[in-house]
Image 1: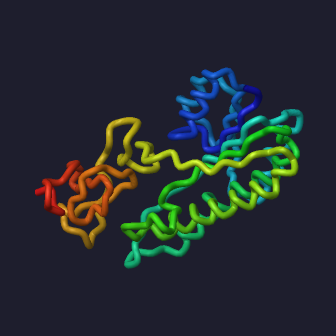
Image 2: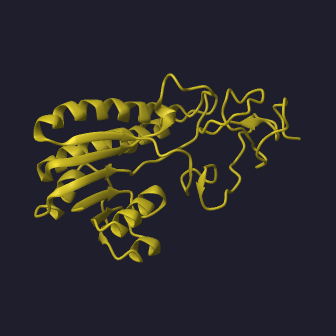
Length: 240
């Protein structure tokens, strides 16, 4: 499979991508700020000490990969900082833009000379970056940053096409990782998330994946109560 570079590879989705790519025979380069025991156990090449939001991150990683021709670049590093209209921290919004949108763009630009003809760039986005699919509001910084990443991905596809490089924008679905702190269809057992102070204990929260039932407030998506119970009683917006 050649060389596959994965950012944010020390945990969560990035770690699993590194694991599966290695199992398929790819020469994985796992990029992260600091490694983890789980990543070290994979036996792949780890390039730690890379903060993708740092100004020198692109040139620093490009220097380390100066003799490598990349077949697959997965821009996975990201952050989710929950917010609401009443609890909005501008610094958090900026931090999400820097990591989720700006960093993948700049890192792709820095590594573009190392991308082989026929290489692929994968941007890990989220359905929460969709404007038309926003049925629950909130998460301003995360939604806006992922929408910006989607826009960057389309432009990158145009700009890298003459070099024979394809760009794909991927929504992995809701996955249980340390970043999501529990909700998700795959991964380890869920841990209850903090309930916003202005919501009653049994208010319904709405993750991203569709399901058939449509309890009030779900708008066609799988519902889950903030107390951690799944599937509220039919016809009610409260689980209790």
